[in-house]
Length: 126
Image (cartoon, rainbow, N blue to C red; front, side):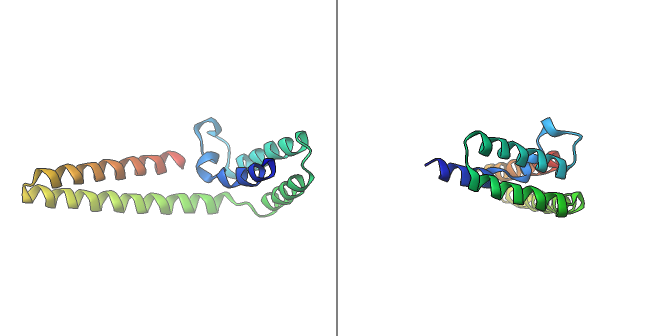
């Protein structure tokens, strides 16, 4: 059971975790290295040599190939997608208001609010 958990934990670590507010001011690669080092400490603590070997490979790959530029470009692309989605939802809401159907209007307002929340989240991640 423990081995399954150790294999799942890195899958849970995502760029959103790396961009958390507690890491404000650090670059993406430094945060990624820090998280991997944390996992290495856990692997050492729980005597998991296979996990340790994989994490050490991951750390060396991060040190060799990590680029903040790629992360920033990806985040900016996501923001642009979210902005397009918000604009689309605003148009849909305007169309629903033109029909005058209150149930459609409320659905479209909820969708717009959700899209705006996603955009805020993407902006905060950058």
